[in-house]
Every structure is written in C-alpha cells, then in structure tokens.
Length: 163
Image 1: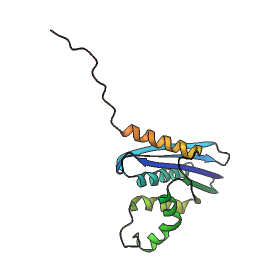
Image 2: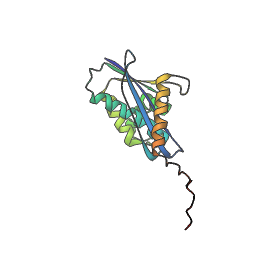
Image 3: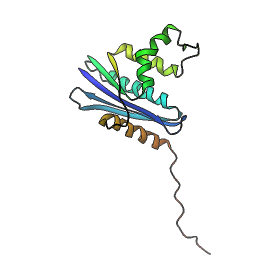
Image 4: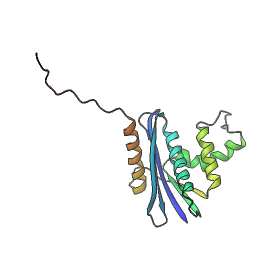
C-alpha cells in the first residue's frame, strides 16, 4: 500500500512554545491518522523534525503492508536534510562541513533510523498556498501551540462588597 504523510511544525518565537502536526492518508486520499503535540521551549526546526518522526512512528505502529510512503513537508530543512545532508553528516561522524556537531542531532538520528526502516520518499511543498492537508497541519500546529500558551486572565467584573 502507498501512503502520504503531510507535516508541519512551528513556534511562537524561535525559540519559544512550539507545535507539530501530521496527517496520514491512503492513496485514495482518505485520512487514516493524524496527530499533534508541542513543547514549551523549542525551535521551528525541532518541531518540523518531530512532526515527521511522529508520523513515521504512527504509520509503523499500525503494521500496514507498506510499499511506499511519501512525506510532504514545507520545511526545506527536513527535505534537504534527508535527501542531501544526512549522507555527508554520517560520513563526517555527524559533523557539518565546518566540523561542528549537527544541530538537532538527537532528532536527526531518530529520523534517519526510521527512514532506513521504511520505504520513504521526500517531497517539499510550498507553505500557505492552499494545499488542503498542508493547511490542515498548519492549523493543527497552531492549535498545539495555543494549548501551551498561558490563558488570558479575565478581569474581575464583580463589584466590591461594602460592609
């Protein structure tokens, strides 16, 4: 079976409270799963990575007969990371070309492991151009962030009582 994953991640401030979301569909476009979550102090890139990691974990737990998974991401960081950079990082001992440790290495290691266990292809999509499932993930990401933000305090509208 073929599956399509749509993901998004973002932050309110960078770093700041962040959210991630994913939607999984079958080849007919039927949604077969979705998820969202967040962290109080994180970055956009970490949330983009967590969206894909959680989506791949979700699909692997379902024990589908998987022929191909296409991950749609609006993050060039994720798409280029998985299609170009990760090979060099691994050859360089998870160091960048200037010999610095790869940022978010803990998440890249998880994503690399999952992508080696599953038949994954990567597709970058432009964000905020009306692609329905990308927009759905964006909305879910914002919902996850909103859950983390402090609720506004309502002013006390009761009149003081005089004794």
